[in-house]
Length: 270
Image (cartoon, rainbow, N blue to C red):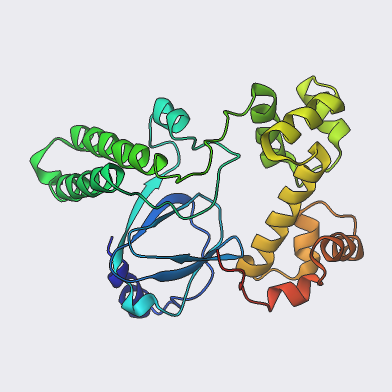
């Protein structure tokens, strides 16, 4: 999809093109000849020409005021679309880096060729059986993802997370609204709290308790900014006993109340 089409498409359907969105699919957003401002999970990124941003399912995003003049492309694909080998090789599993990717040299040429081929095959659906067409697209998106995965610049490639952390992460994703106690996750997974803390610290630099609280805080921010639910319902959904406990939790970690955060803007530019 061309970025230039998004603004008019939203207006045509009576939607606010600048409203926060929370898609359930992956997005690869590439800027061509003009820069693009957009916020992802409440951090604003300035995409310069030639750079890409990878937005994961469930993240809250918001396009900046330069959307009507945007020049670029968006590649959309659902979670589970790519083969497990591609997911592993491209470091698609958390913890992942959220920063613009800037392909250069051979990587930039590889991205361009992969995108051109993907665009061509996407438009040729009628020339192949549907299942064959899907497999061709799967292969080409894999190539594009792998090419972008090489565009990390001088930053060191993150080490693969341990099996303990992967299980802990999955449990937190599933149960962060049920419990915020490390001991509960340790008992459910068959590890000691100390083992979970070592795994979380190695993968993220945060203790297991901090990792849980970070995930709860992120979900609170996403719900406050995107869902329109009152703070009390957000507190209920996240498992807080009452709204005052939620307000204390949120204010201690952000310095503002849930209501103040809901009415704020994303101004931290990366």
